[in-house]
Amino acid sequence: MVSINWCLKLKKGIEIIESNENMSESYLKMAEESLRIIKKVKEESKIWFASTTYYSLYYALYSVMMKIGIKCEIHSCTIEFMKRFLINLYNEEDIELLENAFEIRQDVQYYPNRLFNLKKLNLIADKLPDFFIKTKEIISNLSEKEIEEIRLRLKNV
Image 1 (cartoon, rainbow, N blue to C red):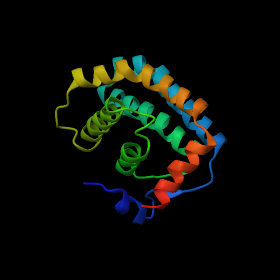
Image 2: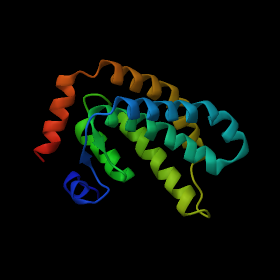
Image 3: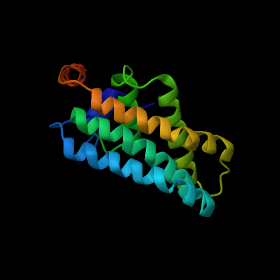
Image 4: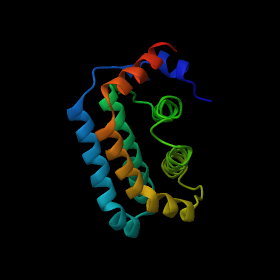
């Protein structure tokens, strides 16, 4: 099981950096691009459908992290950060959505012979637009005070 303490110790784990509006906007655009091509990819490849679905969610989440000033190159640590520090911004359903997409994407990428739940993947993909809109609202409404509180909570771990 991944823990925040473990993630903080890793070289490419969770790290506090300067807040970066440009990177936040770039990741949001990447999420939007992934969202736009989902239907086309879905028709052509289940592998790329799973990956694009996951990355649409991941890039949206990472845009929030860049706005806060949190860097992490380990996806399971990024999800753990979401669970521990963004629970006031995202709900349990959002977290479960990302975790399920991550699991399916890993299965497809690392275990090509393993069957995955296409129905579950379709349900996740159907919820992508709402997650994206919610993320845009989070970024727009995130105050400096909230950002500092999240950063302080992480520093105190």
